[in-house]
Image 1 (cartoon, rainbow, N blue to C red):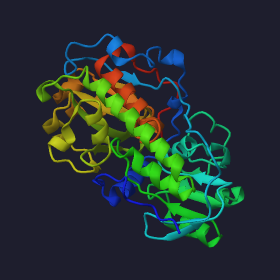
Image 2: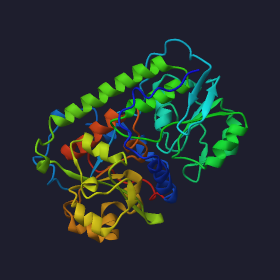
Image 3: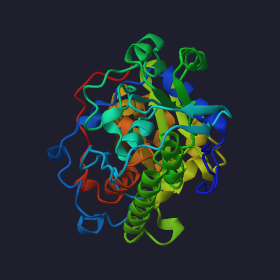
Image 4: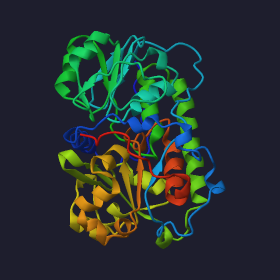
Length: 385
């Protein structure tokens, strides 16, 4: 019997309820598929350039105007696929269930951010994936059937039609009754950790690799990702201000305008680790904001952010920067509002802590420190519903 070992796991600062709260927030906003992930290299001409080679702003706290962070590539690089999966395996999943996996020929990886699917592809098992969630939009997944409806709600009928031999998911997507229905139908359902942070990327890789019978590939991918993230953080550190007082004060704001959803993501939300990785100061955590909570004008004014970090579809849902400032007048009392300083990134990428974490860190850093290299995106679709 194989049990996932916690040996690779570093601190687990993210409470399990946070994953549920993320789902509640996004479901209440009816999150749209992140079409911004379809950007081409021509949309991001400097996306592959080293940060130090770009024209950096003199003072990242005083930069003005919006910018869009984007990736140079939407492909997932797989590790070497040596040998077949070692099956059967039995794992104790994140909900304490012992799950036996005997067949990984038809894998269904689904969560709120597309991270599980990206990890499966990174493990070299993309050819076995039979379906996807609506956040999974990287290269090679375009023709996979979507098994979520109403944004990110599991569709039992669509899943059963695909006849997966194993389903990998987490508590960010549900309802749990559907997961039980799938278990009753004989599908091996493995619930992995809902923790998503820039500094614990390898933990999820180890969980998924263990459940799919490829622990050696998991070690190889985890080691590669740890090295990639460390290199990205070092690259940012070389250009970021040394003094904390000079670092950009950043706040992650989640919005869905048509649903009137406005949330601040604070300490232990995952967004804080991303802000720290790009050399910023997480001002939500600074004012004691824990997890994800509805925004208040008082919190915005107290935080005094220099930079707002947002999802691209979320920003579009309020009519861009102009609409954001109109809907949230308190922003005018912050440096970010006064300078119209908003950095956005595709919904399916910005918090997808997995194989693309290092690339996300670099993309955000370019938008923060070299905004001229990351011009603001021009909306091409209706606001997200």
